[in-house]
Length: 168
Image (cartoon, rainbow, N blue to C red; front, side, top):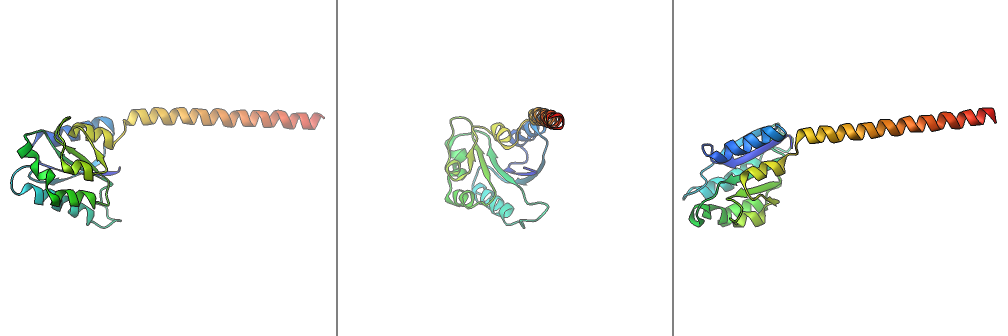
C-alpha cells in the first residue's frame, strides 16, 4: 500500500509500535485518525473513522489503500467498543481493506470477524501490511539476473542456430 490509515489513540504505545515497524520494514505514508479506544465515546469514534476514510474520493490523494484499526490489550471491558454493532458494521462495509489489530494474542473481538484480516497484535498488523523492502529488492535482483541469463542463452542459441544455417 502507498498510504496506510491507522485508527487508534494518538498517545498510546500502539501508534509508536506500528510506525516503528512500518519504518523498519518498508516506509509508507501514514494517516492517523485519532480516536478514543475505550470508554463511552470509543465505538462511535472508531466507526466514524472507518466510515470517514471510506467516504474519501477514490481518486483522492488522501484515500488510503489499507486501514488498520488498532488498540493494545486490556480487560474485556476495555475492549468492548470493538464488540459494538456500529463498529462491526463499519468494518464489514469498508471498501478499503481493513486489518483488525485489537488486543493481544488471545484477545478476540467482533471486529476481528468483520475485518479482512485479524492481526494478533498491533505490531503484527504492521508486518502484515508491508513486506520487508530489502527482501523485495533481493527477490527483484534475483529475478532480474534470471531474466538476463535467459535472454543471453536465447541469443546464444539463436546465434548458434543461425551460424549452423549459414554454413549448411
